[in-house]
Length: 168
View 1 (tube, rainbow, N blue to C red):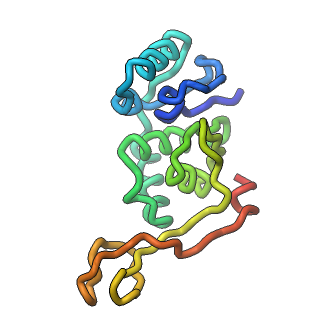
View 2: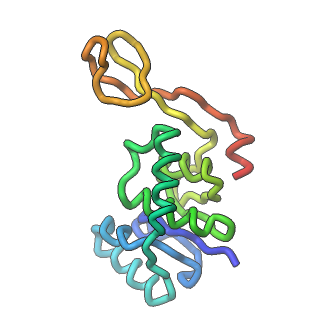
């Protein structure tokens, strides 16, 4: 049986046709729901069998490690990390439902299947780096250039085309 790990977008967008009894999410997703409609969709899904579960701490550590490798860690919220960890727990029998490109990028590199809600699916796997807007030197992380003091801007370091992504 396939389960679907639901990111906030499932309840915000409201166009998910998956049976609620097959949905799993994490408690922090509810904290991201602000509109009355999204909260109503969340409550209705819970009544229909949505499972709300805490992710395993070991899975969160594994997700953080991968997000550091891809340099997506600055883009991921606490909820993003938890939803990825929950999807990792169920990797063999689950599909992660999310529109967040950073979440998708980390997910496919962890071997998690992904389906978007309203956006297009990512096409390539990306590895990021930081580049100084002044001297153009590149760095693995940081906000300020240690050489000239200018701000660092996120820049694609590596793109792994389609095949690696498609297999996930």
